[in-house]
Image (cartoon, rainbow, N blue to C red):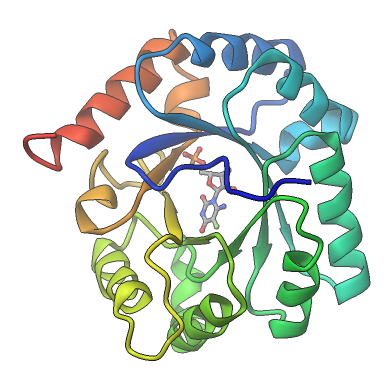
Length: 235
Ligand code: FNU
């Protein structure tokens, strides 16, 4: 049972492992262990579907870097907790779940105390504006009140990262906790630039294709890390 978060609230790159080739995933996990920078690994469904939960264990065996299972869990409380439990048991330090399914589901997963819980508040794609943007402030207040460890905000909309991270940390009765880390996808393949989210209050920028589809994934990860950090100025 994990008592404290293994994912530190500090600027870093969370490498999205969405490749469909398991050996290359293991290779990159090993390489990232020796990479220069603060990294985490996020395992997505395209990789998970290759072998199921075993791929989480294989990546776990290959590296000490924190592992996040991005199943975007969004089911009834019992099933959501079951999925999270399987991911934690396989070696994940954190799971990503949707906040919109409601407080009872989020609470059920948090109460497992099996690892970190990261909730999706707003997403990177255009359709996120249709529904999520209308309820995101409420979702943040509610999930902060429950005590989640991290939230997802879109690097593709830096102004939303700025506004919502401010809300998270405002201490205005929202139950906001400055220890809650923010992860933001959308770098390169979806149009944002390294540092767009970190410069606006995010902690980790999530980068998939721009790293695992590049000629030298480790070098790309290090380069994107340096670029993102340099946007903070003087760090
Ligand atoms: P890349 N992801 C996302 N947008 O892109 N978890 C979200 O709003 C969200 C996510 C994930 O574009 C996506 O599933 F909540 O290749 C993928 O794993 O850099 C990664 O972030 C982006 O991958």
